[in-house]
Length: 130
Ligand SMILES: [Zn+2]
Image 1 (cartoon, rainbow, N blue to C red):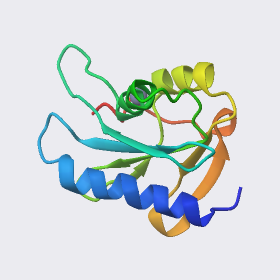
Image 2: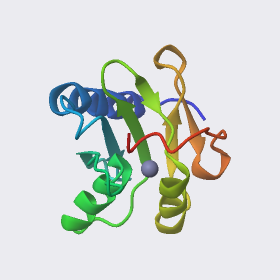
Image 3: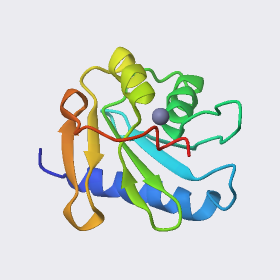
Image 4: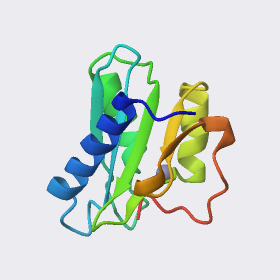
């Protein structure tokens, strides 16, 4: 799928939150998600030995706190210039169950693209909580 201007803006939003808020081992990844009507929600992960919570789940909860239960697009950006990351397997399952038509922005920053959640490339590890 083509990257839209609103997709690029979403990457910028997640990148800004990662730079501003991911400055400790407790918070290392930021996600930003957009609704079809253009509202954007952001969140950071919560790292903890008990398992913590991925940034994607924090964003879902943040949106739900505002009464929003329909997200269209999501992107996750890691701290310290680690760029865009792919949701982990657990998050994919949650995202699939809540938003089966979700668009996910993936790829290196100089070659970002949008893929349907169901077509995400395989990922190696449970990375975004860490
Ligand atoms: Zn995850």
